[in-house]
Image (cartoon, rainbow, N blue to C red):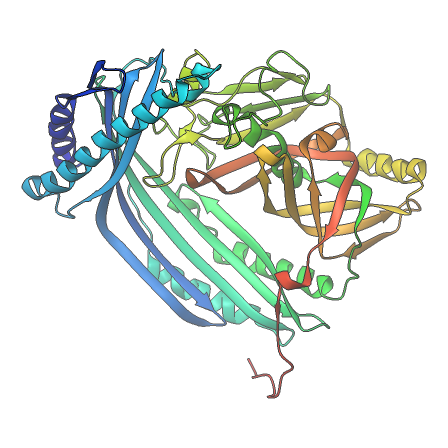
Length: 533
């Protein structure tokens, strides 16, 4: 059930916040009235449950099914179009949502937020004095229609004890003398989102997500503990993987890991590479997706704009055959949401169409800066300040061949480049990027050398490193099969669900680095015999 007391408390205090103002005198003698033109209160109720199993024993249990409530308060002063300042604060409400006791934290935070907004507005005003580019000093805000929506609350139905017993059986069944650890962890979160603002928006939505992670570790001949992992994500508790599926995946991971620890280390080099769909999706997420989050188009701490894609709308920014779009409306995918953290309905956004840049991902603040409307991509974890973020990113191609033909193209590239082999990368552990520094890397799970004569050989310890322009210009063609990668994306507004759907892709040249030995735990020489399982 939607907690009506939450709405009552938020709306009551929203009315109070709308009445606050203060008059002061600026150094030039002019009086100025500080009064917010926009206020909002967002509240989230969280429930969670989980269990961790390691080597056939339970290492942790959690069961926070009694909801806890925390929120974010925002104020904006000045003018949405001419520019102004903003401030926000986070707060928590009592678990019983007592109306009287809730007023104190809201009062304290409203006071702090008001004066924080005054300070921000004044600082931005001071920065405009003598500046040649006044517009860059302020923040802006798009006009959007108010929304009234009450969604259906989802139910968290999971028998944790039954699941625990299943994971214990799997953990014990997978343990082998060649392995060091077999870890399984399950976490499920139910989140209710409440949002009210001074424009009349009033929204409640409910979301559910589970994560089941399996990590299997083994010792290599250098004494390094090498992990191999797989993670399942989902939004429907009825789709938690069954015993047979988890066990089968564990046996596959074990087999792969025992091959990995015996495989030769890949050396640093630039090589032609086939990325499977998971790796293709993650590479596009890192090299272009983050750079198209519109808040990155404004000045950085050096007073400059370093993103690759500002003022490039209508220009070619990717291979001729690539189309890229982000679609949070796809309910079957992990990145789905109905309304973003600004209260704007989620929308499919065409980012790149047949290589031409069409749009950026917007929040209301970034949309105000670009003098457009938000496209519903303000996202955040918990009470972080929302920023434009990806959700479900689709990479599509009109230059498709069969996977076998793609492998044959890789071999031809090896011959043309006089390289003894190229690489095939399958599965991924994600990646990271620094958009302002134009740098990224990604971490494939399984890597194979593909020789020109047809021989294949597993290698290990390799990851991709590079710069967006270098990588984007080197995509040659794709296969006609697609893969989906679900994960958690971390950025300024916290860790949020993110999905990539993409085809296998042949890249003419990628820079490959070896993972440093310091990235692994090195086990001291054993002085005791290893325990029997």
